[in-house]
Length: 410
Image 1 (cartoon, one colour):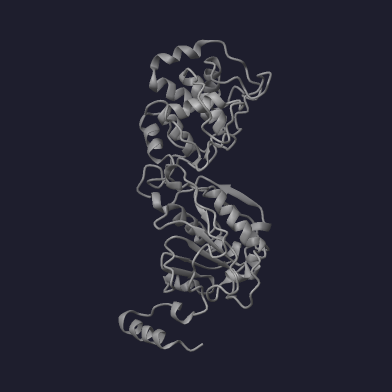
Image 2 (cartoon, rainbow, N blue to C red):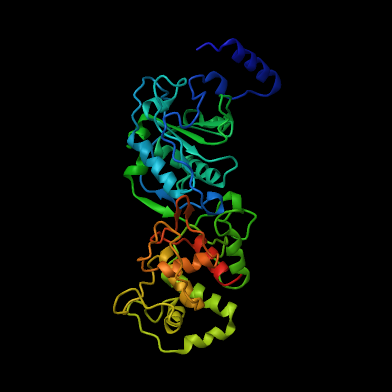
């Protein structure tokens, strides 16, 4: 395709100014006037704690890997969302719950060429700069354990991405991120376009065995105490306070990691609570001297056995079964359970309160404990519109750091 006169002028200027401007200017078919929400599908970004930048629990994938997505730009108009794109959207929004959905499909008579019109594109609503966007894009383009470059982008069938006035193309990976000159600067959303293989949901990410990754150093945290916690991420300041108080040394020593996105297990919770109780009030150790049940699933050589016995003696836990015979040490703690553990550890007088959170009615088993946390300013919930606490959601180590630091005045 012969460039228009303005584009030919830009080519000439690029030749004079720099050693090439990448293939953006010759690639006129790429999304040029991308404006999210044209299909009316946008899901507003939730108002969440810490500006919504969560460290993700991402994945590594076993098995053979496919090549890069070929250049398959829009050829027809069939605005029906494709299963691979829907699955990718759901994965990202579950990983980053405070970001938004800008939509997949677009009407045929709206705007210029776009894979939205074939249901092969998605707009992820985040505003530049965004730690969430940086981390997701880094994950997509990182090599895997076998040295395969851009592994997850290949396994998902990503064809190209646009973010903050730059575009990355699977069919021209040698160029890296190149300047993007479309009408939208893409500073309020990331655009993802998929080849047909990825859009159809046949890419290896969906068919091969996946393993969650929540203990991985990230470049954005290279200069921080914990190499997996960029400044400003959930629990960043609180994890440092716990570290300085001797309550935690993280989840890994070299490099030092906190595993902020990993679930907090009941065994880990026990150790963190015992240390926090002693740091807050050294005299609280007397509470550990009482009789404690012998949990059948906590053997003598369990690394957290002493802490589990201590919180049981102090009445902080009653076990995980109705008869109190088991503790379920490797089971993740929920946000509702953590409210109860903190209330018992601090021996708070529980407030009756009026219902604050839409998902915690007065008949909820942890209603008073959760209302007490809210009344004391320890939590404002998991999102504010509508107010919600997410009592059954798994508590991450990053979120636990926030709860514990606030509850014990660190």
